[in-house]
Each structure stands twice: as C-alpha cells, then as structure tokens.
Amino acid sequence: MIHEIIDIRTEHSEAKLYTYILDNSPEIDRNRKRPTIIICPGGAYGFTSDREAEPIAIKMNAMGFNACVLRYSVSPAVFPTALLELSTAVALIRKNAEQWHVDKNKVIVTGFSAGGHLAASLGVFWNRSFLSESLGISNEEVKPNGILLSYPVITSGTHAHRGSFVALLGENYDSLLDEVSLEKQVTDQTPPTFLWHTFTDEAVPVENSLLFADALLKNKVSLEMHIYPEGAHGLSLGTEETKGKDEEWTLQPEVVNWIEMAGRWIKGL
Image: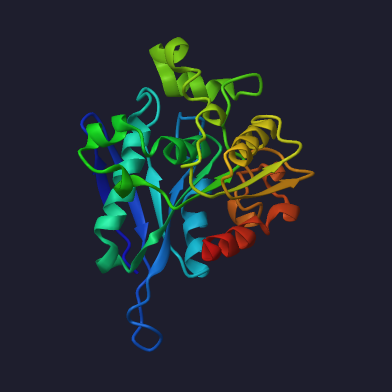
C-alpha cells in the first residue's frame, strides 16, 4: 500500500491528502487499474471528522478500491477554498494514475454531511471557469466521474443546516448564499450520483438529498438513492467501529449496507 500524507496547496491554503493506494500483485494482475475514492469527511465546515475518514478508506480498500482522505480547509477559510483543494486533489490523482494504478475514468468524490456539500460542489461546479482559471488546469482534469453523498448538506433554503453555510461563507454569507444552494446548480453535466440519508435526520433534513435528487432527475442525470426510515445524523458506517465516544445514537445496524450498495454502484459506472 502507498500510504502517504501529501500537501495539497492552492494560492491561499494548504490541505492534507492521506492516501490508501492498494498495491498490485503479479500473482493476480500487475496491470490492474482501480477506481479511486476521494473522501471528504463532515464537520459543518468547522472541522473534519475522524469517524468519516480512515474507517471509510479502509472499507473502500476492502472492496478493491484505492482511497484518499482529504483534510480540507475549514472556517475561517471560506468558499471556494475547500473546493479548490478538492479539485487539486482530483487532478493530482489523475496525474499519478500510472504509478497509483488508477482508472482515470473512475475517480469518485464522496462526502459526508458538509463534506457531502463539498463533494457535490465539485459535481456541479467542475466545468466553471473560476476553477480552471484559479488552478491553471483544465476542467476535464478536475471532473469527478461520480459523486457519492452520505446525508449531505445541499440546500441553503428552508431545510438548510445553517451553521455549515455560516462557516463556509463567513462575511460573504449574504452575497453567496443562493449560489451555494446546490440543488439550483445541477445541470446535465453533473456526474452520476449515489445518495443516502435517513428520514429522521434532524440536523440535516432528508429534504437536502430529495432536492438534489429532484434536480438530477430534471436534468436526466443518473442517480441511485436510498432513504432509511430510522437513524440520526452523522452515522458514518453505522457500526461499532465508527460509533461516537459514548454516543449510542451513532450505531444503526439498518444502514450498514449502504457502503456495499455504493460499491456495486461504483463498479457499474
């Protein structure tokens, strides 16, 4: 395994990319190219959660995928700082595709909660000029081939997780709030998307996923979505491995199959 910590630098920030790149074996297939998953943990744009980082990468490895965890910039950094970092990470993975055994056509961004907002932001903004002009790289280099969203923050409207947008926008809250309501930014160029959420999520209401799904449908973008009837916000894997300290609410056996379904979706892209 190639396990490194790589600096992801933009003009005004520096993030960390933790790689979990699987080795190929001549006994099996020395030329295997693998899907590669970039994981954006949640944390309301105030921190990046450990519970939605390495445990997800290890699960992805177990399914035969390369994985990376992006510890992106959070408040007081404001939009589009984290988006520029994620874009740079996607381009870096494609640049190292040969060395890291990457299938360039299966670079997937996945995010949890506010990390889901970040992943979805790349999905809707990847072809905008402000990204290519800021980074000096082509839009195609930063385009994700799929978006995997776990209980994502999406809308800045009625069902918003308000704290995420306050942290994301800072002094630009009033001027940019509508622009980062991502259900309004979906086009037919948005990549295929996998979403899951719980009906009883009180922190980030299920309407966030429903609004994004509706926009995808209207633009004829392929999607798969699963809504579980029970479960609090921030479940991660829903297992003992990712249970919050002394927080039984983060155990939810009913949702543990989401990552298996996501794995099948990735393989089918």
